[in-house]
Image (cartoon, rainbow, N blue to C red):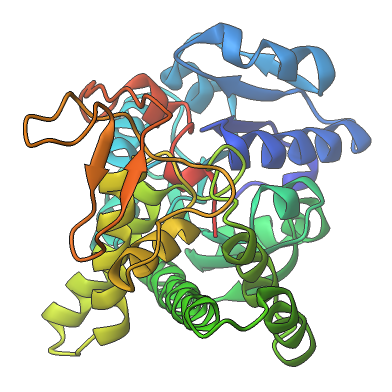
Length: 366
């Protein structure tokens, strides 16, 4: 039997843009119901000390300690490799039997299936529980929450997910892969929307049509969150990834969509084109941009400068072909963009600190 959420201890791992907001709300729920402090862990303790000070949270020293002390553990991790690394450390805990693991990461369906099987072999429960919405929605508990996995565990978490974490729940049944699949299908729609908005705003600019008026049309005719929020970012060229969903996360999700298409012989032409534009945007501005910077790739293809407003171009090494330092020609565009930002890239292995900490894409959900 899964634990009763009204009398148990919670844990949370993956405390970046999304996870920290969700953990804060979960801690509020625990405090309001006279439950123990939410156990939290981060490789770098200093990054989560504010949660222990401001919320009903307690920092523990290891992943095994989280699993040992908690009845229900939430996670929000960057990718499949990190999820395997973290969960296999959870499963080594002595008191893992009966624990419910609630994973909010965007994982490939086969990964969720494997983790559900491994959890079951330890007497634990694994739920695929991805969410839709940006960090602002996570803060206000306005996320759309998907849940799939063991039935008793699903009923336990559904008893508090709304209104603690989100505004509504989509129950996808006993098979945890279905929740993961729902997330990928949803992201297919969102990335397709970004691609279409990128094309439409670029065409508006090329034809001399007022982008503000076109955005007014978007608000009136397509008042859904993805259209309104990403339309505003593309209109203004505000592609900072500090509070949004970063390019590398978007490319991971696009790769999932294309992989599903390849495995099922299903064409994905919109996402294929979006992949090309995301790749161009990454080459020009680095992977720290919001994935709405897909628009920059479209603009370059149309012969426009990639960015309007703030220039997010990364600095380039000195050129030997006549171009000035930090100034590069963009393929097919005939424009030069002076680089203004340095982006440091460091590969720290599949369970690097920034990934386990939730500081990268899975922790800022579209």
